[in-house]
Length: 493
Image (cartoon, rainbow, N blue to C red; front, top):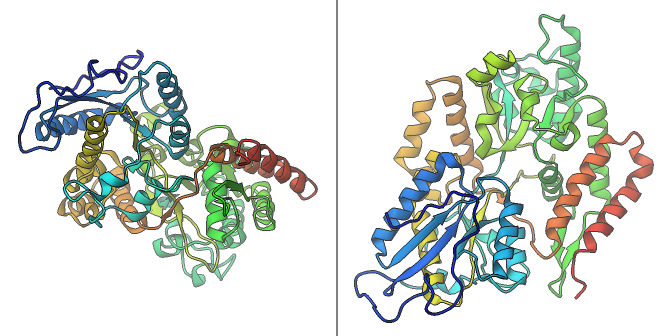
């Protein structure tokens, strides 16, 4: 294999822009053939792919090198998985030493930092190329591609790779068939709860009718028949990302969060009556024991779901396994396994639903070498071609970035195989089916210098609002302070 797999916590070994340095294209020994890169070229792909999936990515890189024999790919993963802040700091530090990768996994806010320093390659010409472009390929999921153009500067600066969104997971053993008609006959038209009802919840239905009825039902049972444990941390519904919760509500209800002004500058818009009204409503839900979030709980809310201190949890489609009670958890923590149902996240009453576009993409960093930039693009195009996008999705749990993934025989075979399997395999099959339904209904938010700080601040604002004992008198000041802090990071011109 030509890839050099670097898994140690070492500085990145990417060369600078010296024409004679390793990694630069050599014009002295061009090689002709039926491939695009004609000169010896070395690139580095810095990723944060989970160790469980790294071997698959390694395999795809090897196959790419066979299609482009003049390209050597150094596939590196020095930081493990998950800490994109550390990844960004590593890349930025490398700019000053001319020691940075060609292709890097990223979130949009990372791309802004790289762009501001002049290192991001605009890929529109590659996308439009008649030979290797993708603009005539309508197979890529639109919202995933559009994320790469959601920046202040016109053009495409990132490309989709490990995408995900959020779904509503619920305790199917408890909720399916639960008859709440004696408490509130309006719930599911007086019928016991079923999959269709739970798949089409509005936030109003959830917090105004369903949660109060569940609480009343549970309170009326003796200790041996309660459907959930009530503790100081419990909440009928949990949300694993305060930031996503706030931003999703703003999008679904049509209230402001962030935007671009007419002159192209970023704008912080979430200090508005609509968002304040939603925070007051959620504060009441938290007080009533209906709601808990990652920040209010100060830990992963999947723990509450697994221990039956919650009956619903909203979390990433890529983290399905964390919502199940494993054999180890059952043995070591005394937890009882249960079936997990999968549904769309709730929506604003009377409006269509939408869930946030999340998960890392990739961007190309400029080394002032056309071969390196093009080779990086070609590598991305290869690992997201129809066959590899399908392999990646079915093996990792990430959403396939192409529509054809969900039309493939293998996708349906995996669903069918899981439907008669273990509790987890059934849940995985349901997750795959639901992903296929919601994949085209994700949304992006504008990305500009300071938008990352706004994202952090709305998560903290949600936490503060939910925990407030007297929110009505504090809410104006809380929003004003949060927006003021966000705005100080946004350029004035």
